[in-house]
Length: 478
Image 1 (cartoon, rainbow, N blue to C red):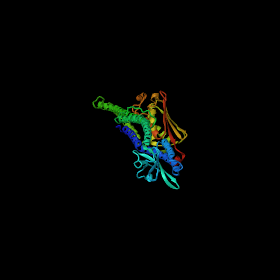
Image 2 (cartoon, rainbow, N blue to C red; image 1 turned 180 degrees about the vertical axis):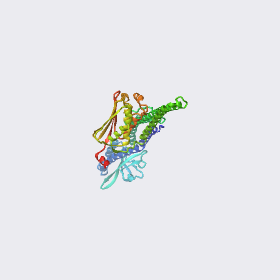
Image 3 (cartoon, rainbow, N blue to C red; image 1 turned 45 degrees about the horizontal axis):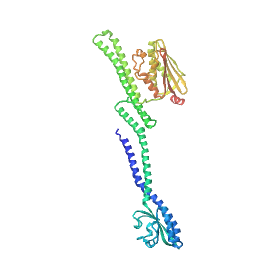
């Protein structure tokens, strides 16, 4: 994976900073200046109205002298840092607070037009060319007898407003820089909490893609990324286990096929080259037939196990009498039991005990368990098959008095091809798949199977089945 995600995030961060400065320099700058201009104009207009309604009105009513009015507006102008003019409608400047009183040298504003402000009460510019710099000028009319006698105009320099706006903008720039630096925390957080774990996960997936399922990585996070990493690691471990199981399966199959094939080839070659005399052929042909039976059983078990895995165990559930199935299964081992002088004891609850399950598969389970019990039982011993009703479940138990299973092997007996050291001498034809198939069948019924065993004493397998309801039984019987 190219580092495009991180670069995109950094690029977005830089673009954010760039456009932030652009906005402050343009949009924020103009808004700040406009706001200050509006505030300054409001203040100047209020003072202009005050002067117009008092000193200027008294002047035009001949109640005060020019000197006294000039002193008043001069003081106000100094306080406001502005120039206050009293202007006639014709544009003649009657008084100027910023210039000494001089009646002989009066100044007329060229092209004076009081409507220059339009719908507003102030204007910005050089005021008809009277100033060399940009000024903000507020108008207030002087009225007497319902007539406009003149105007009070207050001028303030825009440079002062610009300086104030720049000061405020400097604060905005400083705030933006601080925010930009603080936002580095987000970038660092993204790097530490998102990007680095993603890089670890990506590298791990690359390792898994080339078959290195043993690659280990760690992401210390309790969020979705941590969960993703943990899930990925778990998936890899399960795939690794599956791969190991597959290799072990192939090795076990190869071993279990090689042994009987080698034995069969050896006996057949010995019969062909005369090592085994003709009168012994019948005996060794029987041995070869036994080995072929072993291979057939192994092949059938493998096919059964493969079908269980690929088809997802398709069950054909019916209501049937488990007691009768147990009786039939026990009867099928009559000859084997007679040869080993083993007695199968049936302790069954009731005349009939109906369960809801796949009868053919449950027959296979019983066959596998009874076959195991006979193999590992001593001569002149007994095997007990029992059914017990508990709540809505039927418990089926197959118990022998044989060699037992070592404690360390109890959790392994369900693995494919697994055989304990004790069983290898007893089970010459076993494939090590019977118990694995049994557990698959019981689990597919959403039931449980457990084993209790003591080495040298015996073993008991117990599995559960769903009891058929009365309605189901009546429907079946009808």
